[in-house]
Image (tube, rainbow, N blue to C red; front, side, top):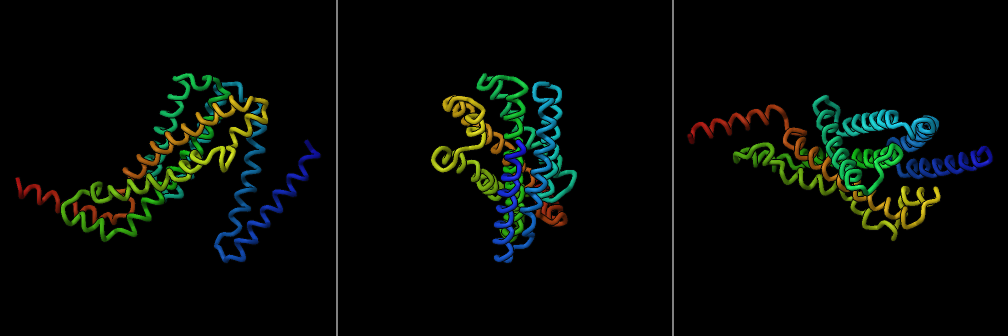
Length: 262
């Protein structure tokens, strides 16, 4: 193990140097973020490796580990979108719905054995990818609503509700958020060999069994991402970037129009 450590450290440092150098030459801001991310990842992987060695067979500790993963993922996604307690509740709820539905289908259908080992493995993968989909959906919704605000305001002026005025924006945000997962799934085996597949083979599993596990993982990622991204986009779009006074003014105007017609 020790003999393999120094080549690993050397490779990581060289790769980080390449990344930082390229970003520096390109004038990209926050060019050290990649290095900080890898450093944090290394520390976290070292810690989780020691922890999981003692808890991977205990369902109670696996549940605790998944809860910690989920909490960190929800906080991270919310911070990327713009932190408020309300948005955290929306993000956490969206991710919980996607992850719960996905894991329930996987284990209730018997696609995977309902064991602590599989729960930890696929739970961590699904949570991480749900976080990515929710983050992309939320950020895309915010950017599109801000960029297309004259269009949104026009719909509001015509009597549309905030949800109706941002409907197309939410739909587009969901589609954009799922592009990475969709492309990964479409190109699996042709462009990339996913980590779960390769890891299973390195662990001694047959290629057919590894492939079976991987397709379940990919389907789970798509399902959790679709549920989470849809909930976040359609919930946040009506108010994410709309000025509060504009929303209230338009809502009051619509109510007045409704009262007049009645």
